[in-house]
Image (tube, rainbow, N blue to C red; front, side, top):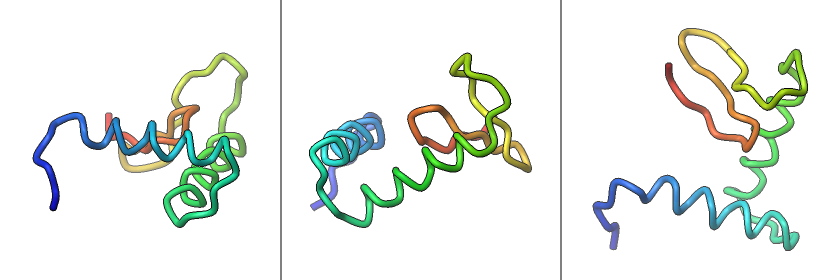
Length: 68
């Protein structure tokens, strides 16, 4: 059952981050690791700012993809 909650994406990200830190292998955790790697590859500074990818899409230091 899916809960219609505006914070569900944030809660999912927190849960995935926790699973990543304890070494859990899951497709969501692997995707988060890939996004963090993508951020590391494309960021041009170490100041923790979001990094532009393309077409208005940005990746954040914690691995989220957002549209600005």
